[in-house]
Image 1 (tube, rainbow, N blue to C red):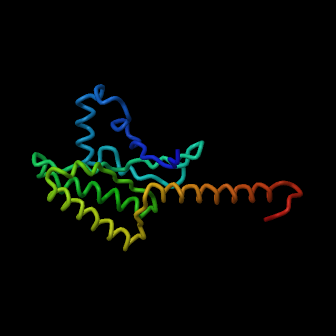
Image 2: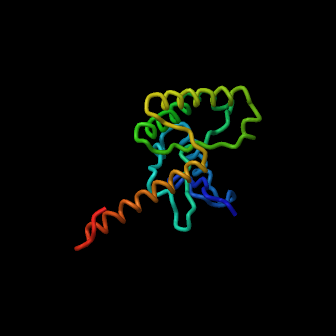
Image 3: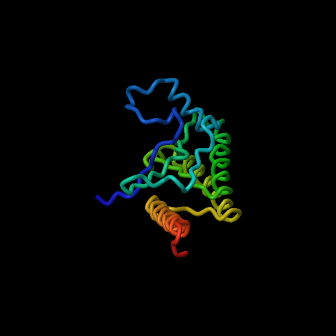
Length: 170
């Protein structure tokens, strides 16, 4: 059907998929806490291992950009710092930081949500300038992943042939 990539879940147990009706309060509290404090780590992803058998590319989530909440406004600096640290970790390592959100979540408190997003984009600009981080669509991640896998397969194949007794070198 033309689907080449999808957003996978974060690796942590608190983000494992399950029906909403079975999600416990403690798990939801852990998820909320993780948005502000590094409970589950940076959740950045190396480029290797994204491709799945059958050709799909799983681009795991790093961070859900939660919408602004007036009740949690005093924690906004923590939320931004949590995102910034993960973005910089990914940028320094040349790995993937996949932030996602639902645009309709910005419908309430638009000014606050857009102001926060502007701060995140400024961090991205710094990461791009300092480390060469780039913004990609999921289709572009899938394309790069396939190209990387093809290059690695070709290198492995050449190395294997060269290692065989009597084989011609590359």
